[in-house]
Image (cartoon, helix red, strand yellow):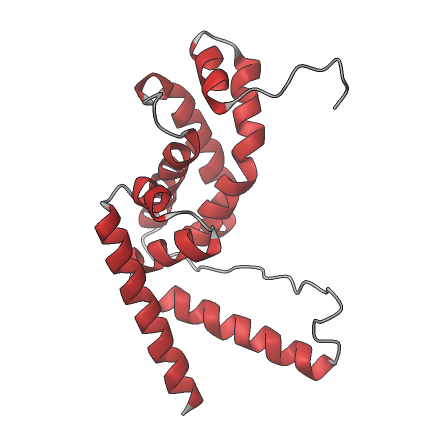
Length: 187
């Protein structure tokens, strides 16, 4: 950033300018949130349709921007639209979308160097993802939002359009099921 460049717009400023017809301001929001919107759609089951879901979500968000409560955070509001669009896409497919996540092994010097260790780590990731994929939808969505997307309970509640208590119970049940699955594999 150059010293002469204006500071980046806050979400509230970008929303305000967008409402006034400034498409460049909305473009700033799209740029800022495309990556997390794509990750959200993908992790919630959109799979190969994630790009289409995200584009549709941004279009819907723009169309409904006047209904956005300015005293709320933009990110959870947008991610709720992404979650709804993902649900619509997977439901219209007539089957449950395959949840697949690409976990890259981060090599920080302490990562597995041995091919056998790499294979074991990949197998563990695949089993964990299969277990997450097998969770009931509501529990899977809560676990994905909380632990894969690292959203707070309040943000997760807003994204999933449910009370915080529901987020807590769904997350608790999902984690309990995952622990039970891990325990079964160890026996």
